[in-house]
Length: 285
Image: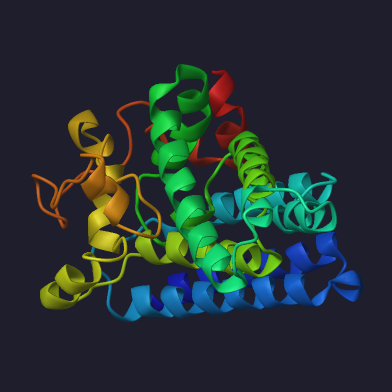
């Protein structure tokens, strides 16, 4: 088990190096350095936590982790080719004095708080719509075909979904006139919370119960990855748990229990479907 964990961390390390090569570490600005540092710190912390105190048995790391990290690298490559990021969208709104918060001359502290809340609500509804709109579900379902549930599942989003999500975020950021500070904070929170609520970590019941009154916990989000359609159509939130409770999409626990519940979808369960090439072409098959 230790060897498998070490191998998985090595795979993650190689992926991190590849990410730096793609981004060209010599040209990273302070915002990118901060985001990458937070990402790597959370990834390593949760990876070690999963190994030391797992919620479920996970014996398929070496079948899944190379492809999941490969998807991450694919997304980094695609995003590096685009002339747009969430942060540059915020700078655009700032430079052109554009957006609702700018026109209302809202205080910075209030516009930061409201930006974080609105952006998290947008991610909730985006996720929910990706389940309802057939073409987007074909793209998003790749995330759900992971047959286990751990921190690397949070990296497993198809490049098409990543681009669509970026365009939605950019539009909302510009329309709001969201401050640059709030956008940087949101991007860090979004990445960190996604890795946290996809992690295979064991939390005491009373801690989980307390945390999920505010944020999405791993036990809460794991239900969303159930093989049963009646369960994976619930618990769409990524950071705050309030949206699922407010809009009637909250389920407390999986009917089979967390240790026994089956993860994934009924389709695409063959071992060959875990290959990187199969994951990238899955929406078109």
